[in-house]
Image (cartoon, rainbow, N blue to C red):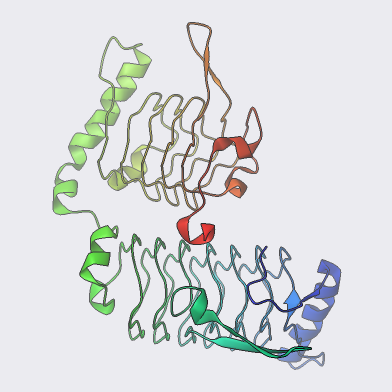
Length: 371
C-alpha cells in the first residue's frame, strides 16, 4: 500500500495492537489502563473490530485494509489517516476527526458520522532537511475522498463535508440533513432513498447518479417479472416453451425478490441497472451481464460458468464460493467466464472457484483507486 504522506510509520503486530487496545478500553471505561497513542503507526490489514475505542488517536497512521467493524470511535482522531479499503461497517464515528483521511474503496455501511469533521487538511513533518508539509488538497479533491465507498444508511448529520468526493459511492438511505457540502462531487453515486433536497448536487452530476426507480420502471415491473417466468419455462423445457429473457438496458432493481436462487441460465441483462440485487445461488451459466451496474450485488454460491461481465461495474459485489470455472459446451469446447474491463478488485474473488489465477480475469480498478 502506497504511503500517502511520505512519513515513516511504526509497524505493529496484531498481538502488540491487541494489548494496546485492551489497555485503552480499560481507560475509557474508568478501569485503569492507558489511552492508546497510535499516531504514525502502520496497522494495515489488522483487526480492531467490536471494540470501545473512543478518543483513540490514529493521526497519520495507516489502517488500509484493516477491519474496524462495529467499533466505537466517538471523538477519535483519524487525522490524515489512510483508511483505504478498510471495513468500517457499523462503526460509531460521531464527532470523530476525519480531516484529510483517505477512504477510497472503504466500506462504511450503517456507520454513524453525525458531527464528524471531514474537511480537507494538511500534515507537517520534521526531517533532516527541515520542515515538510504534505497538503492533502494537492492530492485530489478538496476534501475527504469517499469515492467508490459503500455508505448505505450512513448518517452525515451536520458533518463538515465541504469538497468531499462521493463519486461512484453507494449512498442508499444516507442522511445528509444539516451537512456542509459546498463543492462536493457526486458523479455516478447511488442516491436511492436519499432526500435530494438535503444534497446540493450539480445538475450535471445528478444526471450520472442512480436515484429511485422511475414511475415508468415501476409501471413495467409486472412485464419484467413475466419475462423471468417465461425464461424459467424456456430453461425447463429445453427451449420448447416460454422464451429467452432479455433485459438489456433495463432497471431491474425491483426484481430483487424474484432472482434469488433462480435458474437464469443464458439471461441477457447487458447495461442493466442491477445494484444490490441478490443473485446468490442462481444458475447464471452463460449469462450476458456486459456493462451492467452490479455494485453491491450478491453472487455468493452462484453458478457463473461461462458468464460475461465485460465492462460491468462490480464494485462491492460479492462472489464468495461462486463457480467461475469453464462451461463445457455441446460441441466439446468450453467457455470461460469473462470479466475483461469490469470495474472491481481481485479481493472480491478470494473464495471463488476459478480455473486459473484471479489476475487473469482482466479487472479494471475503480477510477479513483487507479490514480
